[in-house]
Amino acid sequence: MTTTNTHDTQILVDTEVPLVRIIREFDAPVEKVFRAHTDVDLFRQWNGPRGYKMDVPHFDCRTGGSYRYTHTTDTGFVAGFYGSFHEVRENELIVQTFTFDGVPDGVALEKLHFEDLGNGRTRLTATSLVDSFEDRDAFVASGMETGVNEGYEKLDELLAS
Image 1: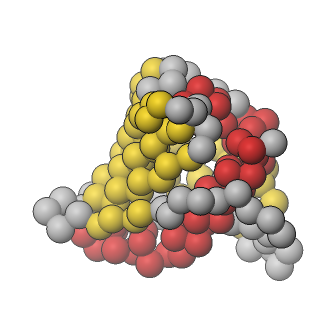
Image 2: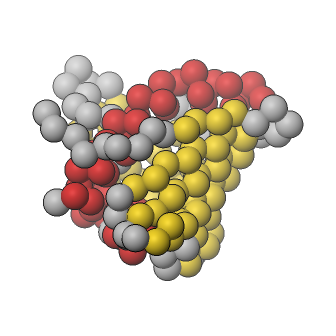
């Protein structure tokens, strides 16, 4: 398999607050990277780890909208996620909640900031704030790194096509 990934994903754990910050650059204009996060047909193509089937029964990416999706493996493992879009500013910002079905009381507040670096490049900075350091550590230990890295590799491929 060929990948166009030329950038590393930084996953940073804050020591002061229960927050995870993910920073990734893409060789694509901010408009394309933003659209890949807000257009359900594009989002479905890249979000999550390789080898998982994605189902998106609901995706209304606008201020006041909401979403629900699941990732399913060939072995039958299902991971469901849902949340609300609190603010969506075109080509700039998405503020949303994020909840995993397996921990319905563990709501993360997420902020995705899209920065135009010029020359057709974009930096995405995503922060996830949770209720406690224990929840943050469980979030990081859950294997999210694999899903993030493989998802962004698929996003690189989608943006290059």
